[in-house]
Length: 276
Image 1: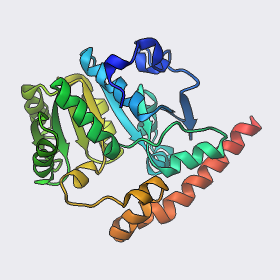
Image 2: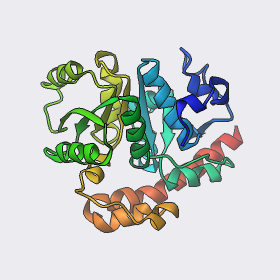
Image 3: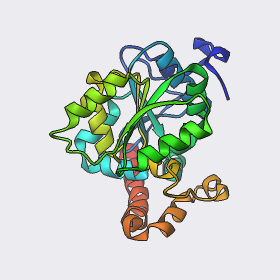
Image 4: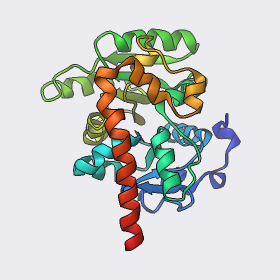
């Protein structure tokens, strides 16, 4: 794994330098677009180095992950699409994005997701004394995750947690005050897409934290409430089949209908671009 002291600014992709204008910071070699959503095509080490630099330099950034389901949602939700394209750090998650890139003749540098990114991020945090706050999931899940992270990563500082089942209209100010009193460097937000991205976008300036990362269902895995797919399924891009097997009632529409729909949408989108 690369650490910040191993990387010079000129060695990083242009976008990782985080210029004041997100569009100015994009390098066409590292920026891809599928269904009108821009995202970075970089390695896990580069993504971690970017996040490390944000905290070290006391910047404030959000990190979003997109998968096939996210892009399906963005087609129908213009606010979500606008929010995604307003961000500097949007990362590709899942086999669907990789397939879409191949369909348009592009090569994805890496399949990134919050679940795989968290362990090295915790190692960096423990080493550099960064603190973390966990926000989201059902009551009790974040507490179990906190205990597991602190046990698995000695020196890791999880300074607080809050479940996601609060009244977002009435209690958000109270939650923000709770987070700001603890001054975490990193806040993981697990409301699911697009709710977490909209919440982060709306409240980023009010939060006294450097990194706000939308992580979807990550808390369920690191609390021990749910098991991840075997490594061979993750490496071959079929982790979604394992998740469908475990939760068919909740996920059948997302995968059985959503995945073919996503491929169809990418095909149509590509065809329209070629006509232009």
